[in-house]
Amino acid sequence: MLHDVIRRFVLIAATLALASLAGCGYNDFQRLDEQSKAAWAEVLNQYQRRADLIPNLVSTVKGEANFEQETLTRVIEARARATSIQVTPEMLNDPQAMERFQQAQGQLGGALSRLLAVAENYPNLKANQAFQDLRVQLEGTENRITVARNKYIQTIQEYNVLARSFPTNLTAMIFNYDPKVGFTVENEQEISRPPTVDFGTNKR
Image (tube, rainbow, N blue to C red; front, side, top):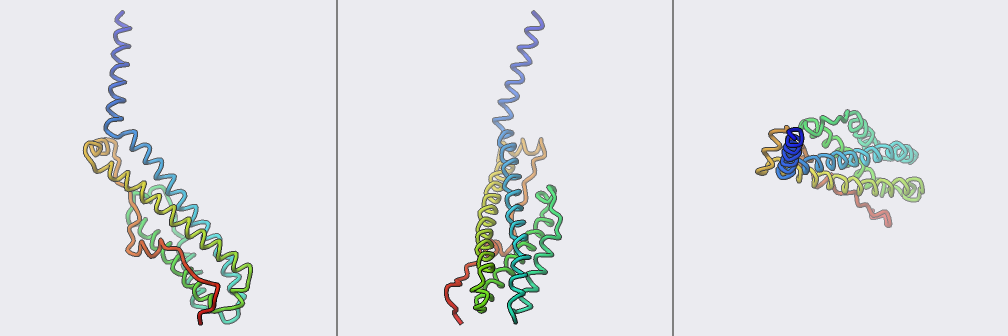
């Protein structure tokens, strides 16, 4: 008899505890934490895809006589900087590390945009099917980067609002759910914009 009473008490207590956790946002923290990790993984996946396309692009452009060496060098150096940064799960909670990563990726995006714009002045490159295919893949990847970044930003914003709002901020304090780092570089809009280069006509 006493055993049954204790068991019922434990079940009731467990039910109340679960209801309390759900009511104070515990489950929402778990959901958004997993979503943010998945969104960040997709951001990294698209950045890696871009980095993987660049060596072939560089090789193709090198075949063009008198191509601006400075523009090509900037792309090579920017890729080297971007890929040299070690990405760890801790980066999501390190504002300085995230800023360095974002700046490196932004510089690479800017260097690529410059290269594609300069390439417009080289008819042989414009007629090169391999170059055209790479250009299309890069522009598609830039679009996917933008989508992935925006998804990550949205998820982080939802998580951070939960972490800072009452009463869910109490849950955040108890379980050490600190606000996550988003994309905060000054040229956010610029590096989020995919390159738009019209290769249909030579505007020189």
